Image (tube, rainbow, N blue to C red; front, side, top):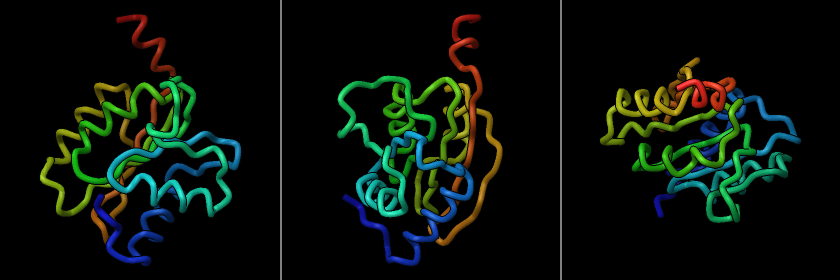
Length: 143
C-alpha cells in the first residue's frame, strides 16, 4: 500500500478535499484508492463519523453524498466507488503528479458517471479535481 509522503502533504490533501466538498458531520463519505484507510482515519479524526471505504461497506447502496478517490489506478477506483454514490453527490479525485493516467481519461470517466467538473486545485501531491452530479438517476432513466 502506498503511503502519503509526509504529514504536511497528507494534511494539505485533507484540507483541500474538505474545502472543496464542504462535508457536514452528517454527510456520508466513501473513500477509495490505495490511501483510503489513511484518509478514512484522518476524516474521522476531524469529526466526520459517517466515513466508509468499499471494504468496510457491506453493500453498494447509493447513499454516500461525497466520494474521495486517491492513488494509482484512478479509473478503476472511480468504477469501484460509483455504485456507492447517490444520484446527488460530489467527488474529489487526487491526481498524483506521478500518476501515469492522463487527467483527460479521468475527466472523461467522471463525465460518463454523470459528474460535472467544477474545480481543480493544485497541492504538493499533484491536483485535486472536484466534480458534482445532480439527479443522475433521472438522466439514466431518460437514456
